[in-house]
Amino acid sequence: MIKKFISIIFLVGVLFSMSAFQTVNPADCEVEEALKVCKKNLSPFSFQDRKTVTFDYTDQSQTKEYDIQLYEGEEYRFVINRSYSPGVEIEVYNKPQEKNNRKLIYSSKTDTNKGEVLTFEPLTIPHLYIDVVIPGGVKDRAQGCVTVMVGYELVFID
Image (tube, rainbow, N blue to C red; front, side):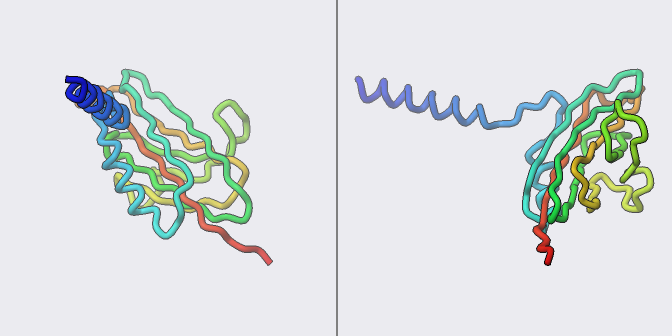
């Protein structure tokens, strides 16, 4: 009887802990699949960071910003998966939204790839600010998400 009780408690604990690691995303995003695609496009760079930005489409356009710190002596590759976010554009700046004189470093509008998975390798500066520009009035989808993965490669300076 006690063994059966302990077995049931153990099974419930395992099931509970497994559910804690599943990604439940209200944006109907396949986050794990998006990450796999990003990881595949990151090579030969080593993984540094990732972020999935979720949002609700509204009548008004909106911008969500994500900042990343970069280090001198490394080269970087950014992989951005926007498969689950129709109409979304990506802009990367050297300063946050509230600062004047921001410099546009990258824009998905001018990227010749124009695909759902974007990659770019910026020059190393202390911080980059990734703006996810969400259009207003998207009728066929209520929510969306964008996954950003950052990789680095050490560059040895003599």
